[in-house]
Image 1 (cartoon, helix red, strand yellow):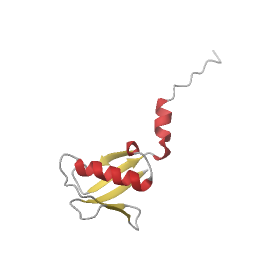
Image 2: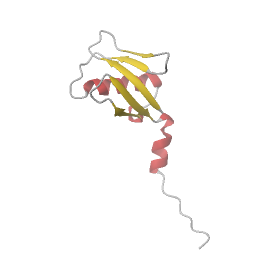
Image 3: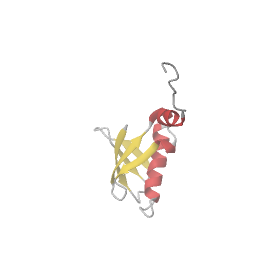
Amino acid sequence: MKINVIVKTNAKKEEVEELSDGSYRVCVHVLPIKGKANQRVIELLANHMKLPKSQFHLIKGMKSKKKTFEVQKSGSYDREQKRAPKLNIGNR
């Protein structure tokens, strides 16, 4: 699932707000230096959605206030990637 996020850095209060169009506004204390704001946005989104941070991947907007994240819900992606490939032994 992809989500669009608008980030406000150097905010007085950290918060996550879901907007009417389904996107999110995330306010963070930290400044956008060396990706620290992006990391904090991921932490706040993960806490808000009750998902692990590893499920969030920034795919667009690394240096912009408008960002797009890919969110892997319930870890199904990780389980499928780690599973051994199925072998078709019958019908030789």
